[in-house]
View 1 (cartoon, rainbow, N blue to C red):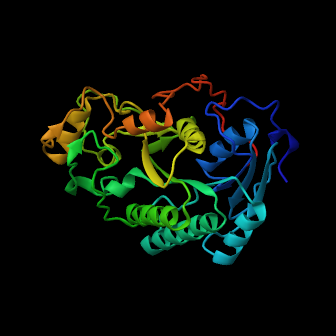
View 2: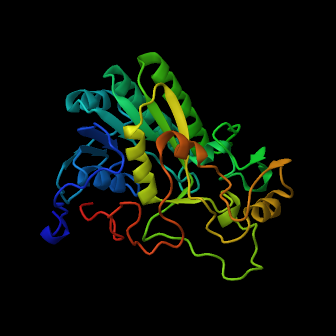
Length: 322
C-alpha cells in the first residue's frame, strides 16, 4: 500500500462549475493521465465516482472507489456497469500511442473496449461521455501527406485517418452513433487536441526562425488543450441537455508554438486551403461548437503556471491517490 501521506481524502465538496444531476459516475481509464483528473474533478464536487482500470490504484480518496476490469472482456464489463447502476458513464480508457505499440493491439483494444462499454451503458439506459481524438481527421500521424479542407477545422471536417489509433477512434465514433440510435441515449464524443498536463508541457521553440515542419508540430499544427480543461468539458457534457450523438472539439484558443497558425499550416502542408479564415495564433481546430452548445471555453493556456482559473481549484501536482 502507498504511504498514508499520499492519500487524497478531499475536504468539503466544491460547487460544480456546470450544474448536473449525476450522483454516481463510472469512469474508465480512471488512473490514466486524463482519467485521474476527471475522477478528481467529479469527486471533489460531490459526485460518487467508480473508477475502472486494469489495476486498482494503491491510494484512496474521498467520493471514489476503484475496480480492476479488463474492458476488452465483455462479460465483466457489462456486469460491472449493471452492478454499479451509474447515472452516467465516462469512457476514457484507450491505448493512445500507435508509435510504441503494435498497430493491431491499439486497434483491437480501443475498438473492443469502446464497444463493450457503450453497449453496456446503452442496455442500462445510461448516458455516455467518451473521448475520441483529433487523430480521427488523419493529420496527427500522417506526416506531410495530409492537408485540411478548410481552416479552422470544425467538427464536420472529413475524417480520414490512416493510422491504427485514429482509425480506432473513428470506429469508436461509429459505435457511439449506433449506440445512441439503438438505445435512445445521449452519447457525447469529445475530440481533444494534444493534451498537456501541468507536469508535462511542451517547450516552445526558442528561435523565431525555427523549423516549423518538425514531427513534433506537424501532426497537430501546435493545437493543444490542458487536461484540466478536458475534465471541465466532461463535466459540461454531463450537464448538457442533449439527445442522440454530438461531437465536440476540446482545444485551447491558440497554438502553443507562438507562431501564426496559417504560417504553420503552409510550412507543413505546402499551401493553405482556399477556405481559410484563421487569424493570428488561433488554433487550427475550432472550439466554437463547444462554446455554443456546452457553455465551455478553455481556461488554461500555454504556459500555465497552475494558478487557479475559471473556478478550477485543482493543483498542479496531479492526483496523489494513483
